[in-house]
Length: 309
Length: 249
View (cartoon, each protein chain N blue to C red):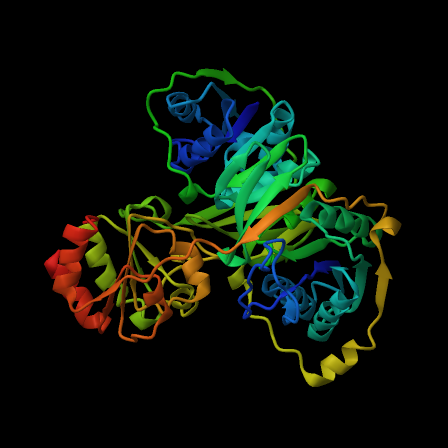
């Protein structure tokens, strides 16, 4: 078996989700190649070559791939993927955008968001917002799957010595153009990669009060998230949303502040190792998944927590 | 211009589904069914484009057994002009749905196809991307803003780090994210009117599409239950437990 893993990167750095995806590839077994499609992305190729367990890195370096436009990258992935038994990508917004397009070009029914590898053709994945886990077997010749990063422990970014080959295929579908992007700037760690996450819900009452969480976050080196209710209320931007339709996180410590614990939120954080809930409503469903629950007014408890850390 | 909107019949988002006792499938007997929330947002966006004068006709499509006509009627009540049902009792996987949609796109020649980014039952997040691949169209997935311009559509997309804007040549595929719009409620007169709007029925065979499933669900099970832990009395005890018991800070 041979597996092609599509690297997640920003042309400068290899993103951590790639390491989790390679871990899923290792669980399947076989030779693991990594595709780095980007522009001026040689450094990413070199980083990928150092990753534990990678046999070969393919670097497709062209302006057509600079912004990961699905129309172009999917064509490349389909061209290369037909020589592999498996094609995997992280289930990030980039992966979810591109991978089904590549699968359709290969006439394959992809499998989204796998959380476990049962065998080379059988995988577990959550459905119904994680309320049900399905075991799914693929009969396609090529298995195409996106990998939920939090479900696989990352492989080491060091210790490998893969060969690096450049790929000359240039696929420019010329139906899409990158116009611009607004990326949230923050000195705090990324939500999906943070060891500690502290999230606020509707109980925060407004965006300014999130300052309380930022202070705690800075003491813990934590990322700050939010429930859908807090995002919909306009307290914070939507890239902070943790939940079924936002980000899926599984940090060592997750602190839910003023979050009631709707199913849609639990779907995004219930795999965290330790969960703390701070809520003044002792009936809040969040307490049913919390390892440590504190029934208290968050406006008293959070500042106190900050001083005691 | 014409817009094609795809709508799916799914278990209502308020229902907590459970696996059947034998683990063969999810128990959907006597469960309330509704239009998939993301599809409802897709219909709303099409209707808003029509209200702006950008769109002249909205065709709502759904696939599945006879009952999915209810969801087409919902779309018609929200403002779609006519419906098409692709009737089948067989299981339809996203690739098969994309192929049926492709056949309809070839027939109807819409300038824009709007779909929900995912359905809340299968959570696949695939159909729009696959339709775009099969038709060679550009794709604006996870849209939070859609602006149709001369011969092109600008789509602002929700991505992991923030927002990205792309410009797609028309015809194009757009899939909706949650914050694209807030769907309206259908008024009673519009619900009555929707019953008289045309609804054509076709099927995968007529469209020349092989819908044979490519994956098989071997088992469904509930996720590992998380045990509720303890309540702590105060912040001091919380910090103490996190340090000495959980050892996470």
